[in-house]
Length: 140
Image: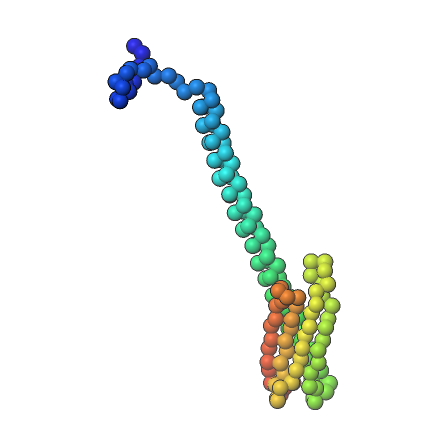
């Protein structure tokens, strides 16, 4: 027995026909394009996430370097105070290389009343990291 459908408006019976090849090909193309769009979206998300993680890692590394530079500046200030108790400060520009490139670095040691302030700065805008520490001169 063959299956057929009835057109409700005209009340005419028509035999059911399987979809032709063009309709099937079109459906397949739409499905493939949809899958490719999903995969492209996932790849774009992963690439963006990887770039953000790389930037954060670089910034974290630069912050650690700034912290070490600040420690070196504090040590330098203490030695200068040992040599000369009337030491009022200086600007020190050590050479630092990060990721194969020379990076501008500055350590500023300044005396404010009976305190010394040491400020370490690494990088150029917008990737500058700065840390500072203030301590009394009388410690040394």
